[in-house]
Structures are given as structure tokens and as C-alpha cells.
Amino acid sequence: MNLVLVVNAGSSSLKYQLLNMDDESVLAKGNCDRIGIGGHVSHKIPSTGYDFEADCNFPTHTEAFEKLVEVLTTGDGKVIDSMSEISAVGHRIVQGAEVFDRACMVTEEVIDKIDGLSELAPVHNHPHALALRACTKVLPEGTPQVVVFDTAFHQTMPPKAYLFGLPYEDYENYHVRRYGFHGTSHRFVSSTLANVMGKDPKDLKIVSCHLGNGSSITAVDGGKSVDTSMGFTPLDGIIMGTRCGAVDPSAITFVMAKHGFDSHEMSEYMNKKSGFAGLSGVSSDNRDVCAAADQGNKRAILTLDILQYQIKRYIGAYAAAMNGVDAVIFTGGIGENSVEVREAVCENMSYFGIEIDKELNKTIHGKLAKISTENSKVEVWVVPTNEELLIARDTLAVIAENK
Image (cartoon, rainbow, N blue to C red; front, side, top):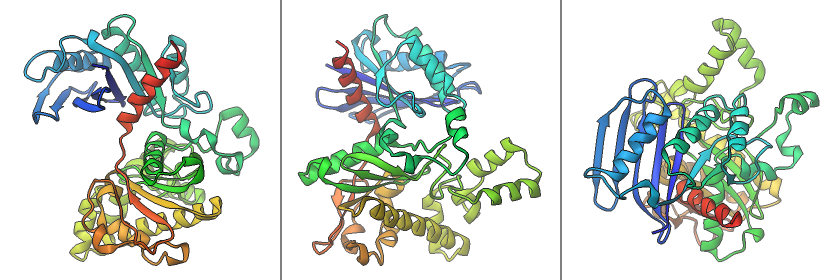
């Protein structure tokens, strides 16, 4: 079997999937979390329904990787005899900035560069570097590793889309610009849709809406990202689970003064206490907000109104930026499953040629489907994302290029 281990490391977590790339099936998946503050592992085998959880001791990412090796190779959850059976490891990296515009092989120099970008993504890049070094320690010598960057897909944006209205020196000296995120997801769903439609990606203008606890919307013109809602960090754009999205900068300094916040406290306020949670007062989970709205909770209703309006506004803006739109994609946890959000976003969009089949839309949850009517000039699709599969594909492609 051609086995690829896909790793997504966070500051205190290590998510993984082991894929058999002969048929692109998932052999096992799980998460080693609470790294540095205790430790917990969950390990699942989709084909059998096996589900294992246990508390562990994970002082660092190295111990988490050692546990990952243990659950994959021993006990009732064993799927391989040893790590030598794994052909390669693919790592998701959040921030590649302008240093990395494509996936590449892991070297010590690459790890250092990823770590060197930590100032641009402090919650993610340093843990990525720690995980890369930890993985190298526990893998058999010579096992190829590849890094795939969330930001790489958006490196095709033109300067008019990625530069802010700050003095140009801030871009030159401090690399302050729009980077965009969820690039792997947007690339996967847009290419999947082109294939399903029987079209060359170069012939399509797509607005891809990745909606979940973190959300971003991307204009994909000719298979390339030309604009995206997330900016310098994943905080920008539409409201999210706990993130505020785009806010007038003066409102930020005003709130900082009122609360007496320093910059770190204000960042925590915008990233972890705002969005659905802060607006609704109910929850950061869209499902809870929808349930509260159904019961007449006014703040929950308002939160959904804001979310739906902002998504609609981006679709309109990106249709203008691309001089048209052929298809709109809904993906991510909310995009794939929230009937209410999809219907509300597409309501009163006939001017753009968007019309969905409301009854069909109600039946679609987490599966690939066209939900627009035959009369709709713009096709509207639900396309489940699969970032891990694309990372695995990229990993094998990069290794093949470097042989």
C-alpha cells in the first residue's frame, strides 16, 4: 500500500489521518490534544467503527507523536505493523507568507524558515516547527516529509487585492499584507467542482464559501485565487465562531481604551470572545445559535442575519471583481450542513442569476450536490471539503518531482 500520514499540528494538538493512496481511503484518524497541559488521545478506524480515547501525558509534541505511533502500530487500533510502512508524511502549515508559494520537501532550513514566520502566525507556526522536529525524531530515517501551506493558494492575488492602505514601508519592512487562509480547502473544492461540471478550471469564475467555526470566502478566477476575505491573519472577513471579522480599526482602539486593554488582551477579545459567541450571547456554535433563533432569541436572530448578509455581500463583491460568476460553492461545517444559511444567503440574488431549489436544499447535508434550479444562470453547489486528501496528493506529487 502507498500510505501517507497527514499531520495538522496546533499549539496544543496534533490531528492526523493515515490514508491509503491506492484508493484514497482513510485507514485511521485521530487527535493528540492538550499537549503541554496534560494530554488526551482519540483514535478512530472508519472502516470498522473502532473508537478509542484515553488520557495521556504529553509534555511536548514529541510525546504526542510517540503516542500516535503507538496507537497506529499496537493494540486493538493497530492498522500497520511499523512506521516503516508509511511512504511519506504531509504536514499542513498555516502561514507560508511570501516565502512559500507551493508545497515543498521538509529540510532543516525549511523548518527554520517556517519557525521564522512565527511573528505572522504566533498561534500556529512555532507549534508547526515543533511538530516537524518531533516527527523527524520518531520516523524511520529517510522517510520523506512535505509541507503544504494554507496561504500558498492565495499567492496569485494581485497587489491591488493584498495590499492595505498603510504606508508602503510597513509592507516592505514588516510584510503587512493580506495573506488569506483556508487555501487548501478552496483549492480542493474549486478543482473538484470544475471536474464535476466537466469544465477546465481556467474557464470558470467561482466564489468559494468555506463556512465553519472559522470562515473565509475566496474569488477563484481561472483556477487561481484573486481575492479572499481573510487578511493578515484569520481574524479578518466575516463573523465566525469567536472571531469578530472585519471591524473599523478606530472601533478597536476605542474599545481598547474603554476596557483598558493592551494589544494582547484586545487580540484575545477579538479572536476568542467575539463573533457568534459575543454577538448572540448563546454559543460559538452555529447550530446552537440557529436553535436559539428558532426559539425567538433576538440576538441569535440578529447574529444569523449579520452572517448571512456578510456572505451575500462578499459574493456580490467578488462577482464584480471577476466580471461575473459561474458558480458559488458552500463548504465547511456550516456550508455543507446549514440549510438555513445557504437559503438565506441565496435569497433575493436573482439580479446575479442565483436561484436555489429550496426543497432540494433542505435535503442536502454534507454531500456533493447542485442545489440551484435549472433556470439559475449561476450554479450553486455544496462541495464537501477534504483538505487532508489534497495534502496527501500534494505530498506524493512533491516527492515525485524531487526524485
